Amino acid sequence: MWLILSIIGYALLAIVAIMDKYLLSSAKVQPALYTFYSTIFVLPLLLLVPFGVNFLNTPFDWAMVLVSGVSFAFALWAMFLGFEKSEISHVGPLVGAAVPLFVLLFSSLFLSEILTIRQLVACGFLIAGSLIVSFEKSKQHSGWHWGMVWGILAGVLFAVSHVSAKYIYGHYDFYSGFVWTRAATGLLGLLLLFHPTVYRSLFKNSVLEEQENKVFSAKTKKDNIILVVINKVLGSVAVVIVQYAVAIGSVSLVNALNGLEYAFLIIFVLVLSKFWPKKFNEDYTGLEIVLESLAVVVIGVGLILLV
Image 1 (spheres, one colour):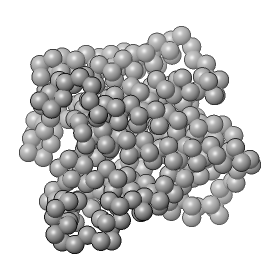
Image 2: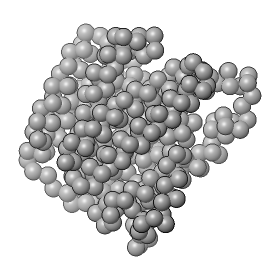
Image 3: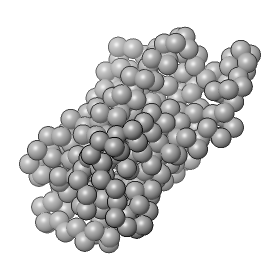
Image 4: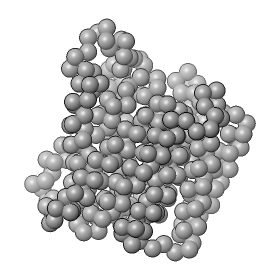
């Protein structure tokens, strides 16, 4: 069950990631502002507290909730910065490789989670596949650059979030754990109202400033707001699915499957670049095409080992 849920969740997250890249690059939404949109909409989960949400028992548990929620929000911010500075088909997989690697490390240290040899080998294939596809040699970048640094930081923060959430799911029911951890993410979104970029965009932008900053300039402001809402709804559904898979399965294995998201992403990006090059286009060298094809095969082998 957790495997099927993980595949569905990561397929949805691949779609969300492509929409993220479009909004950050073509629509020119600033990463801080986009992080605000990505986090503030989960704050209303606090309204569910009177409806069967259990309160936590210890200060340590509340601290774990805050760590999980806030690190998730900062991970999104770091990932969006990476997407802005590079191509999503490279930074995305780098995030996908970093997350399970650090989850495996943190879960073994703090949750005493032990995997079988077969599962460890499967994790190795899934992580290797993501690392292969993160290779980038384009007109803008060759080798390491800031986009990749932000990607690795995002991976570390996502890992911290997932492992601390797994701790909460292990001590409380999924419903209560999910509401508290995501509400903590929403609190960070609320604090982002004080970020100069967010505050200026929401409350002080004149028409001239809006044109200069190109906060929403890809078709019309209305069209892009609708796209953001659709993106956040899809993202929320995907997060719920993946978090439930984490709750009922192994946090290390579910996050190792993160490579699937980027296998889906490679396919989706190729299709979009082929049929809608004006809206979404990424350059591929011959070597990159070979490596990305190899990565899909490697990820597939890792998936087969988990079945």
